[in-house]
Amino acid sequence: MTVKIYIPRDAAAIALGAEKVAKAMAEAIGARGLDATIVRNGSRGMHWLEPLVEVETADGRIAYGPVRARDVTSLLDAGLLEGGDHALCLGKTEEIPFLKQQTRLTFARCGIIDPLSLDDYQAHGGLTGLRNAIAMAPEAIVAQVTESGLRGRGGAGFPTGIKWKTVLEAAGARKYIVCNADEGDSGTFADRMIMEGDPFVLIEGMAIAGIATGATKGFIYTRSEYPHAIAAMAEAIEIARKAGVLGPSVLGSGRAFDMEVREGAGAYVCGEETALLNSLEGKRGIVRAKPPLPAHKGLFDCPTVINNVISLASVPIIMDKGAAYYRDFGMGRSRGTIPIQIAGNIKHAGLFETAFGLALGEIIDHIGGGTASGRPVKAVQVGGPLGAYFPRALFDTPFDYEAFAARDGLIGHAGIVVFDDTVDMLHQARFAMEFCAVESCGKCTPCRIGSTRGVEVADKIAAGIEPEKNRELLADLCNTMKFGSLCALGGFTPYPVMSAMTHFPDDFQPAPRVEAAE
Image (cartoon, rainbow, N blue to C red; front, side, top):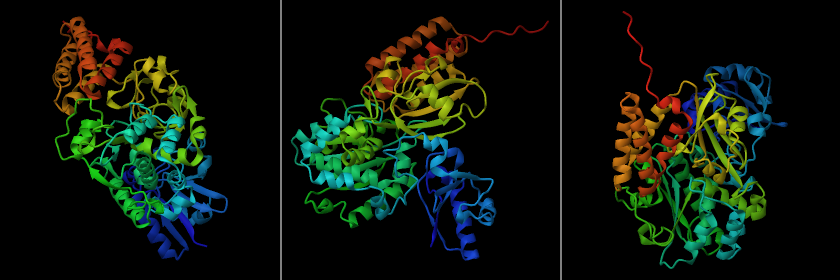
């Protein structure tokens, strides 16, 4: 019986040498005449263990990592194909604590299946949700998604079902599904992991959205910095089309839906839905005034659903297991699971999918294992470059949209970046303003000019020039940007700035002068 050896083709694993490991393994298997085959899977999300090599045994998968090309010979000598003991052996993959503690719904197949095998996808429950959907009326599909409590996982947290209902009821000769895969936040990689590790789940989710709303065409708008994801999605779409999952009659239902990938030029503001639509139409990526909402007049002035990758990838399990099953996870108005991406100065960086409600401190200290440097955690930024900085005093905050909002924070795309006690929070506040100035589309004055002035004011504080006056001015600038900006780029930049000033005031004091020796 041919033994399967799994070596990820995920971009994170490739960056850490997975291609060299796969090449060395293939050569060694051939040279030894072993009955084994290599499957290039997605990542399990434990980045400190990448490249993670797994072997399928009668007792389940056995994991080894992090593996380098030079380790291949000793691994095979130790009986890798039988799950033999080795210094890099981690035991059964599913028993690794980081994985065992997770609740994987959206990422249930990621790292387990061959990403480009439709048969593998279906063998692990794929397409069940779509088959259920095509047997239902569009209104019933929308109702099920609404009842599940699924909210936008891109950051805004808007109820997905309400957005779908609006598009379903909107009049239009043509309707569209647009997947926002422009994952530009710092410390985020969940969208990329899905597209590279389980692309069919996104295709299935978008097809369900199309059938539910009457849309016949879908677009995945992603970043030029994601070449592996773009290639995987393009190939998966072609496979799905040939298999009848996409096309004029989805799975023989008589309902049409097709899709394609579009590559953005790398503008952060194109993560905002109306700037994204402009870019898709071949225009400059600047924000549109609302109303009209994209649900009424979106792509090419047609009713358009715009959802994040994780929102759409969560739909198949809702249509498979039912609204109540999904809604049973989470807390308050935050239902289901959230793929938390842990990055920065952290020992165990990676993706951790869990139900909403886990305390921030539990994620940092227990799941993440504290800082990689071994120094105390000073600040944690949640929600990308526009997210607030939380000190340890707020580590009891549960991972929940409303709980974070109540403390002037935001979950955003659920990226967490950890900083130890060597970080300068005035510098971080300045960086937020600088980032906004660089990435602003320039359409509105508060964002375009406010961020530029913010950098200047931060520099004056750092130089000790009228620090009290300039701290007040910086706060005033933040207030203007928060309430006067046209979109979230300018509107949310005050979150990191004000949280840094509020929670770390010592970093905004003039540096003490050192008197020169006589």
